[in-house]
Image 1 (tube, rainbow, N blue to C red):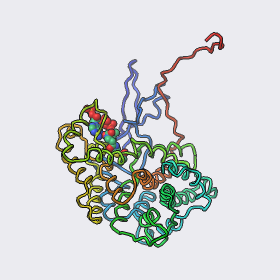
Image 2: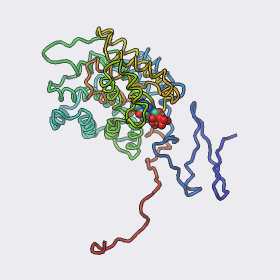
Image 3: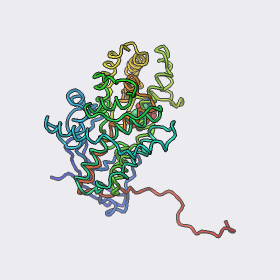
Image 4: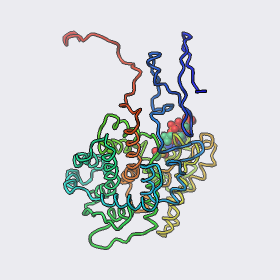
Length: 429
Ligand code: ACO
């Protein structure tokens, strides 16, 4: 029998609503007819209890600490796949075989260059512009370059836009960095892997040969895999909402980048790194823990806690492992901040305050340390996150456009302003 939920109103009237089941995860009450039946809306700022769409891409079980892309655990993807295989999976629903992978990699690789005219956009920015400001602008500007593929109702157009975005983001992110530092742009090289090419575009200079370090490339690739998608978070919901009006994919991804820029979303790894610098020494940990437990202090243990994960964020475990690999490779086993982070994690995980509130390390606790070791400056952290998340955004956008239930996103409100009143002439106000 079909499940239903019954809402009983004060006047004794009852309304039935269908209960829908996904493949896994909580069931949802389908309230689409609520307003028509009752004249009432639901009130849920921050979407604490609202499923805004149906999706087959990413699944999170926050209590169990599980993250699946298209059903595959993140741990297995991080171990057995590279970032472009993960992109293929997110976009197409299945992992590629060797032939599919070759074709996919070849297409991405051949779209990495940007239109030469696009390089002029960079010079319009001040040299000290935040690279995220540059990224929002330049990615938005891509819409003006690809009039040939902006019909969002054409699956082929959507596919080519996905390739263009995934392929060009590393080039644009690296250009934003080079522009900041005053160094010349480095063009992509088609004989390198996606992540190796990105590192070369970031760190090579014309004066000498750039040597690719496979351990560091693998670490970056893993960062990209771990950040590739995370179901209906703020930036992904922004991309979906922007796209629901029919806006083109480049404009929608620029909107997602803008949302990710906020410190409550993409900026937490920077905050975690700054916090470690501030603590400075393991002897200061007890004092710092005392401070974050005090609600009046206004400070939090950055990189701890998550809206969805009430267990160890599975990405944090992988990031800690990657941290070990990178620091060993660079001979930095005794890295001060990494040691401090591990000591801090240990103290917090044994502390009643954190245990009772189910506060565990999230992905940001270690990702700043890894990126710093790779030579990526703090100001670029959110750009790297944008680069990784672009595939998730575009997969979610594509899924939305293909969904027959898709409608323009239009939330309602609980109005608390003035009721109707009459405008008085200016001399009577
Ligand atoms: N340090 C100290 N106390 C914390 C922390 C923390 N990092 N996180 C939550 N708490 C406390 C809250 O004060 C609250 O305590 P109370 O019940 O006594 O009032 C309780 O734990 C529950 O916290 P909420 O804020 O209700 O949890 P919510 O789900 O709204 O917030 C959030 C999650 C925003 C991530 C929060 O844990 C936080 O601010 N963490 C630090 C910032 C951070 O690392 N953000 C990265 C998120 S991951 C990402 O975006 C990729």
